[in-house]
Image 1 (cartoon, rainbow, N blue to C red):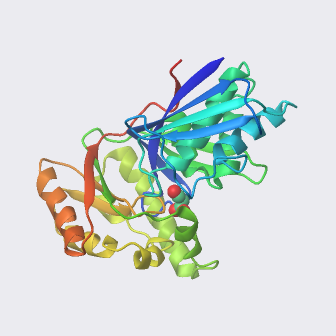
Image 2 (cartoon, rainbow, N blue to C red):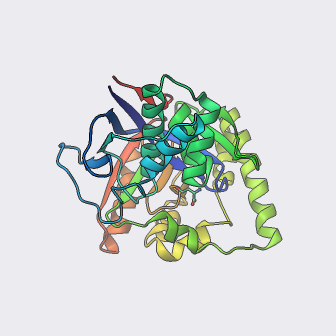
Length: 310
Ligand code: HSE
């Protein structure tokens, strides 16, 4: 038996909501799991590019250390089974190591596909909890599973509490992807273990206001809310262009905010109105001045989370 699951990309944090806010985006990975007779270890993991060619990404293990396998193993273990004889194929359209939830998407894809193969023993809560355990934080895996814009929290018992927010249709998401990579573990390592109390209070105010701004389509409050003192200031040093882009966009009327996408290096610009091309040019030229090439996409929120294709 063989199951394929399509999972959206995600952007996390949305500025002040570190490890809490997340949003699904219409770029997708597909994960296929097939129960089959395999030689050797009993598992085979392949990663395919958009045009179906196998890609060899040195940083991604293709043995039992692979995060997809780990997630699938936890699911099997939760019902007292051990996975064996699995062929896992990942068709990857979500850029890797850019802060767009590519690892969350494959964890979720593997889990949902394995759950389907096993006759759906895990409910949404169990899938959220296993996916978060493997990923380490809930802000990418939650929208990858349920779609939309979410606020999510991992509790001490491993469960995940989340709520969806209604994102205003007229607010577009400009996803700006530079041509350099930044692995999440490096981007997390530059954040200090402790931060000043006043910075924590700053983020508390901003993230509370962000929820209100989204829920009430309050553009003025949105502009005020999309700022952060917990991670962006530290990551700016390893994300060339981020500070310059924020600075160059700060007087643009149609820009509601500009933040790092997850751990970066992609940047998310929230916009309204018809000035998209001008804003796109500002971002492209800012990176270009630093010899960085970029791809920029103007997207809407993906309301659909992971779906079983066949
Ligand atoms: N909240 C996580 C971080 C997202 O900022 O490290 C990683 O994609």
